[in-house]
Image 1: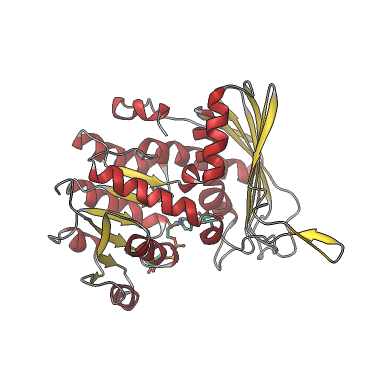
Image 2 (image 1 turned 60 degrees about the vertical axis):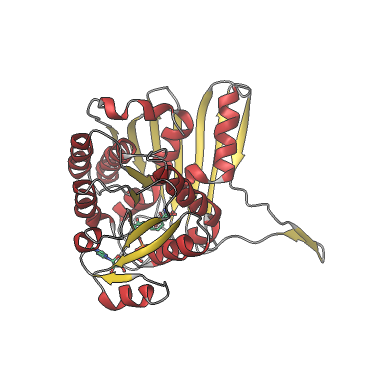
Length: 345
Ligand code: NAD
Ligand code: ISE
């Protein structure tokens, strides 16, 4: 596509995230429009396409990518379907924004990495949207000034109201803590070297056989120790909080104090109920940044290396969940194509 032209995007998967991204591209993002949607559920794809002028509905991602009016792809199908869509997009050298996870395991992530390396340039951004959240961005900027000194510890809390049907203990690691893995690596500019998962007595509100909450500990190659409380059936709200403890002070995000009320002898505020509400601005900024970079022919966000590194931490986490032991994270050598991105935003 020429630089001045509107980016025509095919959105693959029109469930909760995909439908929200279609709305976002059409109503919030500048410089892009949705030209095709894909879902294995044909009726769902048709219903979403019907809301967008000139948008076609498909059931096969590869067929949509072959259409003449598709310049780029946003993948929002479930994780196990990502590899096939990514490989089809890379085959056509199409730019991609792929919702997390890149793929569900390291073997498939490495196949995607090989395909991108064969192209010789980066094409894929992974949807680790917390990097675009204003509070996380302020925290990163503060750390980069050096005012707080060297980071020593990072405490995280990640709470969801209730887990969707079919949720398993492993999904707390692979679908939820995956975000803390990414922000840990990004905030610290360090790799995670081991994972330990501790298993408190499960909440009575957790579905049968689901280990919820979990307490996860990462160690990094810079000597930082990171803990994550993941609790996906907390019942009261959606909370994502992080506190970095450094040599000369601490910095915390996610307290949600945008509006505090005082009334009838009490003070308080409201708690977001899900990620679509809490991270609305982050998703908007993420998609806009992807569109802008894509129109310039660049990839500026988290990429395939980040998706692969996080998949390796997930695999170690799931092994630790089985026996509570400390499991080392094994990474392949970072290929030259991905060496610059470690320093980037
Ligand atoms: P969802 O189940 O609501 O929607 C998935 C849709 O994909 C469904 O409509 C399903 O029919 C369709 N689908 C299944 N297989 C497909 C295939 N092979 N090709 C095309 N469509 C297919 O799921 P969701 O909650 O929207 O999650 C989608 C993705 O977004 C997942 O990767 C998930 O991890 C990610 N996600 C990210 C965030 C975030 O905060 N960044 C939040 C939630 C979900
Ligand atoms: C979901 O898939 C997400 O990515 C959300 O950001 C996370 O908070 C939630 O736990 C996951 O299920």
